[in-house]
Every structure is written in C-alpha cells, then in structure tokens.
Length: 214
Image 1 (cartoon, rainbow, N blue to C red):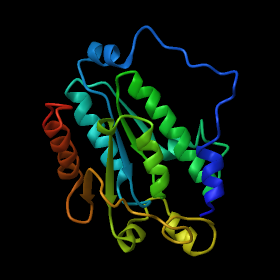
Image 2 (image 1 turned 180 degrees about the vertical axis):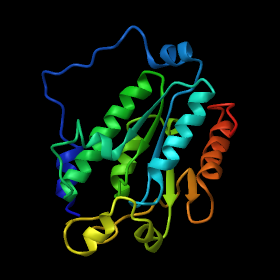
Image 3 (image 1 turned 120 degrees about the vertical axis):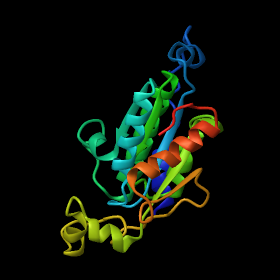
C-alpha cells in the first residue's frame, strides 16, 4: 500500500481559520445521563467471517439490558456517507477515517458504538484507536479461515472476486492484515453467534462497561 496515500488521507492539517469550540455539556455528562460508560467496539475481519451477525447480536443484548447503542456497519456506511468511495487502497483508508470520526462523535454523545467493517489495514485501525482514549476502543478480531469464508460467501462476493469480476477484494486480490493484539479474539469456526456475543459481553463486564449477561 502506498504510504503517501495514507499520509494524505490521515495527516492533512486543519485549515488555519478553523478553531475548536468547547461545548458546555461534555462526554462525561452525556454518558452520566445515560447511565453507562461509552466505548467503541471495532469488529474487523474478512468478508463472511461473521462481523455483522455478531455485531447485531451484541447490540441486541446490550439494548435489552437498557444500554444506548449505535451500530455502524461498513456496507451501510457505503450507502450514505461513504457512497462516493470505491475499494482501492486510498478509498479504503478514507472509508475507515470517516467511519472512525463518526464513531468518535457518537462516543462523545455517550453511546456504546459497535463498528463492523473489514478494515483490512492495521495502520488505519490504529489511527481509529488513537482518535479516542485508550480505554475507549476495543478491537474485536472476528476470525475465520479464508477457506471457510469462501464456503460461506453469503453475498456471493468471493465467487465474483475469484472470477475476476471484483477488483481489490480483500483476501483475494487485496491483503488483509489481521490484528496482532486485539482486546477480543472471536473464532467463528469454533463457536456459534450466541457464544461469541457472550464472549464480548464477558469482556465488557470485566472492564466495568456493562453488567449485562447473555
């Protein structure tokens, strides 16, 4: 991946006529009004690994426990805010940057934000983490072998990519860089969705983010 592309997308300086406004009501007050500790859960993994399914189940469990949540799904983001982006490296970098900035805003609103994106590059996931406090970002590696993802192929994308119909497809013609030290590692070839969502809630309880149980 071209590092100059990364620099252009992630290190562009703010305009000199822009000044930060400090709001009277801050993140702590917003979180207190909701009775919860805000956090970003960033689910990353290959297409077909099970990210969206697990993200939906985790949000449902948290919602039933009374938490205020928001789910940012990578595909859904490309219908709106990110609809002008393709899948070249530069577009993928910008896709992550925009989604991370939206997640940060929702974190400021006091929400538990669940992001579900392939997000194939380690550097971009690190930049997303660095936007917020260290204890406010949990990387969740939704891990499934590539061969299993090809077998599942719920959207028919691997078949099309292998036929040369989709360029820059992660795992086929574009690389995926797995997390080296994720806070949560989910093996979707070994456990069902309820057990995996339960693992996420276990970590959130251990960190004092929720008392919610599966």
